[in-house]
Length: 118
Image (cartoon, helix red, strand yellow):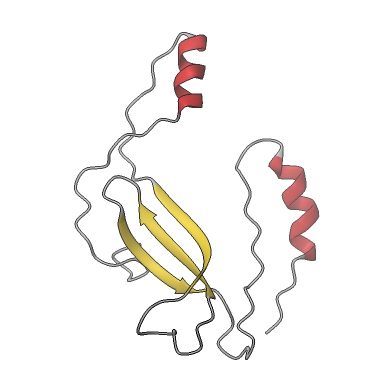
C-alpha cells in the first residue's frame, strides 16, 4: 500500500511481533507456542479531529480515518471520512467485521443493504 501511495513511504524497519494477553493465554492453555509473524500490525482509528493549520478555522472536529503502524507508531495516513460535497461534513457510514466463521452469515445479510449516497 506504500508503493501505490495509499500510505506514506516511511521506513518501518522489521515487523515487531505482538501478541495480546488473550492470545498468550490461549497458547498456554492449548499447549502450543505462538509463531513469529512477519507482518506489520496496523491500527485504523476513526476519530473526529481538528487538524491544526488545515481545518481549524471553525473550531469543529471533523471525521477522519488515521492509520498507525504499531511497532514504530508511525502515522501512515490521515484520510478525510466525509464526502467533500457535504456542507455538514457528516461521517461516512462504516461497517467493520472481525473475520471469523460467525461473520459470514452477517455479511451475506448486510451487504445487499449497504447503499451509499453520492
